[in-house]
Length: 231
Image 1: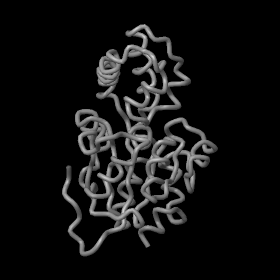
Image 2 (image 1 turned 120 degrees about the horizontal axis):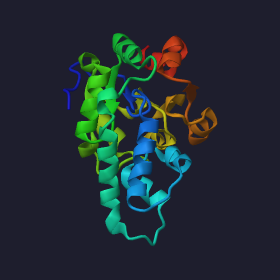
Image 3 (image 1 turned 90 degrees about the vertical axis):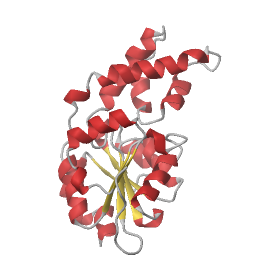
């Protein structure tokens, strides 16, 4: 984890989800989960999987498989997903405008924290793709939270790592689970469509604003919640 900011008092900041928000990986995760389920004999439609991307692995498996299943398979399904997704690490690319948005936030004086609940190896691969470590205040991984989204643990850990307070921080995410987790800590979420989730679903979950992708948010930055945090 990177060091916290050294400015006096509590800085204002933004917590960024990574998968689907900053890295174009939501559909890669969907395909990896689909293969992982199939390897264990489960026929789960990709459409159902995609809607749950961003949720923690244990919760995702619980949502998609029968409650009376043999749960001894769950860990191996999760491991298979991780192995299948790792094949795509070398080709991971930022979503449109992601790098520029992160740098703009830092230029505006916001503490920029990557709030990922992926494992350390996956986060390292995504950080390599983004190449913005010089503007990051802190980064979280799965080891920083006991429970994954929609529980708020990873955002609580990100606030602590960045030396931030919830009332002075906004979340940017692409999944309804980002919105739900942020609301539980009293934080507003700006929803992005870069993960394939609709504006209607993100707003229904409680997103205060919606943009098609980081580039659209960057272009509207001056009137966005991010600019109001920086003011």
